[in-house]
Length: 164
Image (cartoon, rainbow, N blue to C red):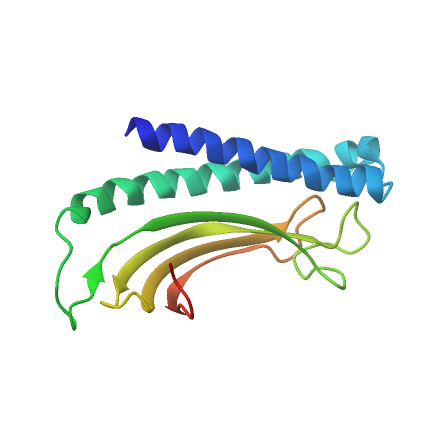
């Protein structure tokens, strides 16, 4: 449990570095007005980011507890595959080639799209080539005003071409 908490703080610190780095790109490199952003879109963006990151950490913690219970008893069935092998959290920033479908056009940054979520392994083949995972995903505008942000859950099939 202590290891999870330590790693969560490390993950949050890394996320903050990524977000600050992207803000430097938008406000320094692209020359957008930070003061104007704070007045128009900033408050909502900061609240949305905090809610998104907090939700992902909470979901990761819940899945950590659940998978910890299964981790000691990996089932050897379905052609000797294993169940509930790992849980991962992801966060990223995509820079679209055109205005992002998640952003209102004309905002401070209408090209940056955030993607964050949780992958929970359900089953892995015995040779570790195929995974079936549960996935929760959130997409929204990073620094601009949201237009089509969304949350989704689903099942994902992963084929590992190479895996160490």
